[in-house]
Amino acid sequence: MIDTDNSKKKLRNYITSNFSMSIDVLDEVMRLFSPGLYKKGEYFSKQGEPSKYCGFVCEGILNMYILNEDGSQFIKTFITENQFMLATFDPEEQSTITIQAITDAPVMLADYSVLQRMFEKYPSFGLFAKMEIEKYLESVYKKLEEFATKDAKKRYLMFLREFPDLAEKIPQYYIASYLGITPTQLSRIRKTMHLEKS
Image (cartoon, rainbow, N blue to C red):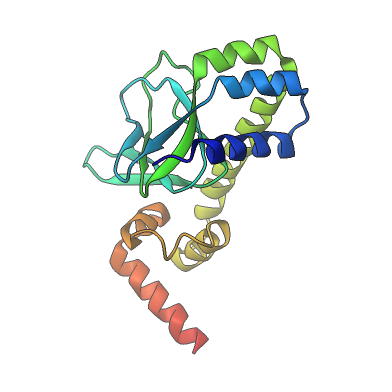
Protein backbone atom coordinates (compact mmCIF):
# COMPACT_ATOMS: atom_id res chain seq x y z
CA MET A 1 0.00 0.00 0.00
CA ILE A 2 1.25 3.48 -0.88
CA ASP A 3 1.57 6.15 1.81
CA THR A 4 0.51 8.97 -0.52
CA ASP A 5 1.04 11.79 1.97
CA ASN A 6 4.54 10.56 2.84
CA SER A 7 5.51 10.23 -0.83
CA LYS A 8 4.34 13.77 -1.60
CA LYS A 9 6.14 15.09 1.47
CA LYS A 10 9.42 13.43 0.47
CA LEU A 11 9.33 14.91 -3.04
CA ARG A 12 8.40 18.36 -1.78
CA ASN A 13 11.13 18.29 0.88
CA TYR A 14 13.72 17.16 -1.66
CA ILE A 15 12.90 19.98 -4.08
CA THR A 16 12.78 22.69 -1.42
CA SER A 17 16.04 21.55 0.21
CA ASN A 18 17.92 21.46 -3.10
CA PHE A 19 16.59 24.46 -4.96
CA SER A 20 14.81 27.73 -4.30
CA MET A 21 11.53 28.44 -6.07
CA SER A 22 8.33 30.28 -5.18
CA ILE A 23 5.53 28.45 -3.38
CA ASP A 24 3.21 28.98 -6.38
CA VAL A 25 5.66 27.32 -8.77
CA LEU A 26 6.36 24.52 -6.32
CA ASP A 27 2.63 23.85 -5.88
CA GLU A 28 2.14 23.73 -9.64
CA VAL A 29 5.06 21.33 -10.04
CA MET A 30 3.74 19.10 -7.26
CA ARG A 31 0.35 18.85 -8.99
CA LEU A 32 2.08 17.20 -11.97
CA PHE A 33 3.26 14.27 -9.85
CA SER A 34 1.11 11.34 -8.77
CA PRO A 35 2.02 8.54 -6.35
CA GLY A 36 2.76 5.11 -7.78
CA LEU A 37 4.27 1.81 -6.71
CA TYR A 38 6.62 -0.54 -8.53
CA LYS A 39 6.52 -4.00 -7.02
CA LYS A 40 9.72 -6.05 -6.92
CA GLY A 41 10.47 -7.18 -10.48
CA GLU A 42 8.24 -4.60 -12.18
CA TYR A 43 9.63 -2.25 -14.85
CA PHE A 44 9.73 1.53 -14.85
CA SER A 45 11.10 1.34 -18.40
CA LYS A 46 12.19 -1.30 -20.88
CA GLN A 47 15.03 -1.14 -23.39
CA GLY A 48 13.60 -0.67 -26.90
CA GLU A 49 10.27 0.74 -25.71
CA PRO A 50 9.08 4.35 -25.25
CA SER A 51 9.19 5.69 -21.70
CA LYS A 52 7.04 8.73 -20.96
CA TYR A 53 7.53 9.20 -17.22
CA CYS A 54 9.94 10.92 -14.90
CA GLY A 55 9.99 9.32 -11.47
CA PHE A 56 11.16 10.26 -7.99
CA VAL A 57 12.00 7.32 -5.73
CA CYS A 58 10.51 7.70 -2.27
CA GLU A 59 11.72 4.34 -0.94
CA GLY A 60 13.24 1.13 -2.25
CA ILE A 61 15.86 0.20 -4.84
CA LEU A 62 15.78 -0.02 -8.64
CA ASN A 63 18.56 -0.88 -11.05
CA MET A 64 19.32 0.65 -14.41
CA TYR A 65 20.81 -1.74 -16.93
CA ILE A 66 21.52 -2.47 -20.57
CA LEU A 67 20.68 -5.88 -21.99
CA ASN A 68 23.60 -7.20 -24.05
CA GLU A 69 23.17 -9.27 -27.22
CA ASP A 70 23.99 -12.47 -25.31
CA GLY A 71 21.17 -11.76 -22.86
CA SER A 72 23.44 -10.69 -20.00
CA GLN A 73 22.87 -7.49 -18.05
CA PHE A 74 25.28 -4.59 -17.70
CA ILE A 75 24.12 -2.62 -14.66
CA LYS A 76 24.90 1.07 -15.05
CA THR A 77 23.74 2.16 -11.62
CA PHE A 78 21.32 1.65 -8.75
CA ILE A 79 18.55 4.17 -8.06
CA THR A 80 17.65 4.62 -4.42
CA GLU A 81 15.60 6.82 -2.11
CA ASN A 82 15.48 10.56 -2.93
CA GLN A 83 16.70 10.14 -6.51
CA PHE A 84 15.00 11.03 -9.78
CA MET A 85 14.91 8.51 -12.62
CA LEU A 86 14.40 9.03 -16.33
CA ALA A 87 14.89 6.48 -19.09
CA THR A 88 15.10 8.89 -22.04
CA PHE A 89 15.25 12.66 -22.54
CA ASP A 90 12.81 12.36 -25.47
CA PRO A 91 9.49 10.66 -24.58
CA GLU A 92 8.93 9.91 -28.27
CA GLU A 93 12.12 7.86 -28.58
CA GLN A 94 12.71 4.28 -27.53
CA SER A 95 14.63 3.84 -24.31
CA THR A 96 18.18 2.51 -24.55
CA ILE A 97 18.05 1.27 -20.95
CA THR A 98 15.86 -0.81 -18.65
CA ILE A 99 14.93 0.32 -15.15
CA GLN A 100 13.54 -2.42 -12.90
CA ALA A 101 12.54 -2.56 -9.23
CA ILE A 102 14.77 -4.80 -7.10
CA THR A 103 12.55 -4.15 -4.07
CA ASP A 104 9.07 -2.66 -3.76
CA ALA A 105 9.49 1.02 -4.57
CA PRO A 106 6.92 3.77 -3.87
CA VAL A 107 7.51 6.62 -6.33
CA MET A 108 6.11 9.93 -7.51
CA LEU A 109 5.47 10.00 -11.27
CA ALA A 110 4.99 12.80 -13.80
CA ASP A 111 4.57 12.82 -17.57
CA TYR A 112 7.99 14.04 -18.78
CA SER A 113 6.60 15.90 -21.81
CA VAL A 114 4.40 17.95 -19.43
CA LEU A 115 7.42 18.61 -17.20
CA GLN A 116 9.34 19.87 -20.24
CA ARG A 117 6.64 22.46 -20.84
CA MET A 118 7.01 23.52 -17.22
CA PHE A 119 10.75 24.00 -17.79
CA GLU A 120 9.91 26.55 -20.49
CA LYS A 121 7.18 28.23 -18.46
CA TYR A 122 9.31 28.54 -15.32
CA PRO A 123 13.05 28.91 -16.06
CA SER A 124 13.86 28.48 -12.35
CA PHE A 125 12.30 25.02 -12.40
CA GLY A 126 14.12 24.27 -15.64
CA LEU A 127 17.39 25.21 -13.95
CA PHE A 128 16.63 22.80 -11.10
CA ALA A 129 16.02 19.99 -13.62
CA LYS A 130 19.22 20.85 -15.48
CA MET A 131 21.20 20.68 -12.25
CA GLU A 132 19.72 17.25 -11.43
CA ILE A 133 20.57 15.91 -14.89
CA GLU A 134 24.12 17.27 -14.73
CA LYS A 135 24.60 15.75 -11.27
CA TYR A 136 23.49 12.35 -12.56
CA LEU A 137 25.64 12.49 -15.71
CA GLU A 138 28.67 13.58 -13.70
CA SER A 139 28.28 10.57 -11.39
CA VAL A 140 27.95 8.16 -14.35
CA TYR A 141 31.01 9.58 -16.15
CA LYS A 142 33.03 9.53 -12.93
CA LYS A 143 32.13 5.88 -12.34
CA LEU A 144 33.05 4.85 -15.90
CA GLU A 145 36.35 6.72 -15.73
CA GLU A 146 37.34 5.28 -12.35
CA PHE A 147 36.16 1.76 -13.12
CA ALA A 148 38.33 1.70 -16.23
CA THR A 149 41.50 2.18 -14.17
CA LYS A 150 40.77 0.13 -11.03
CA ASP A 151 40.89 -3.59 -10.27
CA ALA A 152 37.84 -5.52 -9.06
CA LYS A 153 38.54 -5.07 -5.35
CA LYS A 154 38.92 -1.31 -5.70
CA ARG A 155 35.71 -1.17 -7.75
CA TYR A 156 33.93 -3.03 -4.95
CA LEU A 157 35.26 -0.57 -2.37
CA MET A 158 33.94 2.26 -4.57
CA PHE A 159 30.54 0.55 -4.65
CA LEU A 160 30.52 0.31 -0.84
CA ARG A 161 31.32 4.02 -0.55
CA GLU A 162 28.65 5.07 -3.05
CA PHE A 163 25.96 2.65 -1.84
CA PRO A 164 26.84 1.90 1.81
CA ASP A 165 23.50 0.29 2.64
CA LEU A 166 22.99 -1.82 -0.47
CA ALA A 167 25.43 -4.70 0.01
CA GLU A 168 23.19 -6.47 2.51
CA LYS A 169 19.90 -5.53 0.86
CA ILE A 170 20.24 -6.86 -2.69
CA PRO A 171 21.36 -10.18 -4.23
CA GLN A 172 25.10 -10.42 -4.83
CA TYR A 173 24.70 -11.10 -8.56
CA TYR A 174 23.38 -7.55 -9.00
CA ILE A 175 26.52 -6.16 -7.39
CA ALA A 176 28.75 -8.47 -9.47
CA SER A 177 27.06 -7.28 -12.66
CA TYR A 178 27.54 -3.66 -11.63
CA LEU A 179 31.24 -4.32 -10.98
CA GLY A 180 31.72 -6.23 -14.25
CA ILE A 181 32.78 -9.46 -12.52
CA THR A 182 31.23 -12.86 -11.78
CA PRO A 183 29.43 -13.64 -8.49
CA THR A 184 32.23 -16.11 -7.72
CA GLN A 185 34.85 -13.38 -8.08
CA LEU A 186 32.80 -11.11 -5.83
CA SER A 187 32.53 -13.86 -3.23
CA ARG A 188 36.33 -14.23 -3.23
CA ILE A 189 36.82 -10.49 -2.80
CA ARG A 190 34.36 -10.36 0.10
CA LYS A 191 36.05 -13.36 1.74
CA THR A 192 39.51 -11.80 1.36
CA MET A 193 38.32 -8.51 2.85
CA HIS A 194 36.70 -10.36 5.76
CA LEU A 195 39.97 -12.20 6.47
CA GLU A 196 41.93 -8.95 6.30
CA LYS A 197 39.68 -7.46 8.97
CA SER A 198 40.02 -10.41 11.35
